[in-house]
Length: 233
Image (spheres, rainbow, N blue to C red):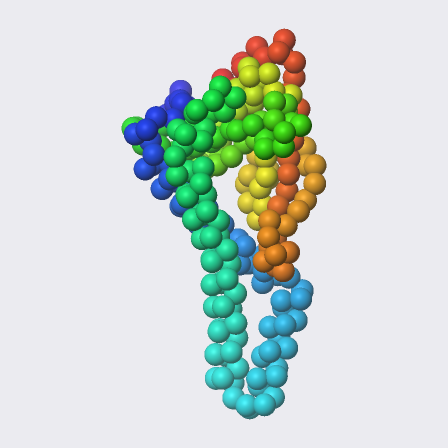
């Protein structure tokens, strides 16, 4: 028997949902940093800087300090990028979840609750493009507490969105994630989402080659809703 339950968001969940989002997004800093270190151009730049420092100073200590300074700068920039995203989100749709997700019939926000605590979240909004506003539903803010992963919570939350989209008459569910969110990429692919295209979220992401990926899941007809609902159980 599942040790959690999924239900619609309530105002009392606000603090738990925001704290979970903050923690989950912060976990992306280290994978992004290591992604940057593995880029050939960054390795060449780092090695070049170390060799130049050693050549002109003749000091291994200064060379070591130069390397550590460059790594610290890179980590700071990566952390700043994710913190900017977190701040933006907490000041927009996560600033008032009820207003942004629960004010209309075509959107919603859910939490996974375990022992009275919010351990998972997911939201869904119609896409902003007017031509697809009533056809595509976009999945947002899928987060699961690290201590509760491996229990199928993320899968259940995604299937909740799929069922909601079908019940609301949408034709597809879309979402975006980054290439360093490996668990999310694997989850969406296993659930039947298909990649549509890749892009860079901003100029810094382009510089560090951090690609975002868009996915789509084409919903079956309303007649198939029973099967989808049973699969989610």
